Amino acid sequence: MIDDAIRVLAGDCTVITEADDRAEYRGRVTTLVKPDNTVLVHDADGYQPVAWLTRADSVSSDRADGFTLVAKKGTRTLRLAAHDRDGFAHYPTSAAGTPVGECPDCGGALVRSSGVHCVGCGDSYGVPTDATVRDDQCHCDCGLPRMRVERGLAFNVCLDRDCESLDAAVREAFDREWDCPEPNCDGALRVLRRGGLIAGCEHYPDCDTGFAMPAGVVNGECACGLPTFETGTGTRCLDTACERILEGASEADAASDD
Image 1 (cartoon, rainbow, N blue to C red):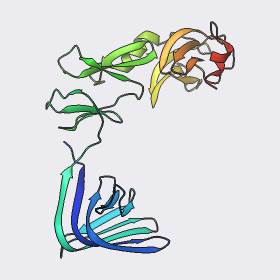
Image 2 (tube, rainbow, N blue to C red; image 1 turned 90 degrees about the vertical axis):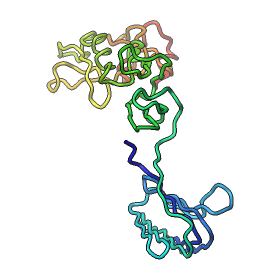
Image 3 (tube, one colour; image 1 turned 135 degrees about the horizontal axis):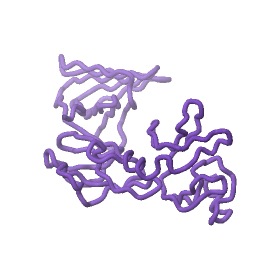
Image 4 (cartoon, helix red, strand yellow; image 1 turned 60 degrees about the horizontal axis):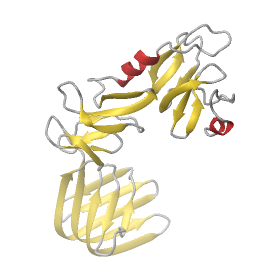
């Protein structure tokens, strides 16, 4: 379900802003209160609000005798009082994004913003920022699009991680594939999720060596023994702090990630 809503207040209003100084306006305006408590007061001129408060700490309103609204953020206050009310309503809202498919549950549009969500029913799916959402659908019955993600190899998996797990695919390909580079450790690197996907030593916490899995494909081996990855910014070692020359790469490629 979509719980977020934009509140809309319209009418002949007095608008007062108080911060380092005080300003007062009056006119027939339309005020928007967004789900994150951003308040925008629009008049007839141009695209810029005549008054606004971004992500207020608190917003309170009262519809008695027209309507009033008070928004506060730190030492800043925005007050609005209607002398003649034209409207007071709220409408469902969501983040706007690029269309990437159709929701199999409700037929609404799937769009990509910070992740992928349905404009109709609000179903949402976490998507890595570097992922490409594909046109083809998942092979199972879920009906969702697939995404392409590079984590050592290029993986094509379902948007729904409960349907087809990116973690499991990366783990199958690279779990224990590389040795821990610590001189006194005989462990292997496991594929783990700690915030993001990492290659971390199996002897944790005795050995806390770990490296974030980069967005790229393995294309060789670094002089330190760890793999190198071809990424959007060039070739780099799994260990971002590694300063050795990469085997099969130029010095310029090795320095491109500095």
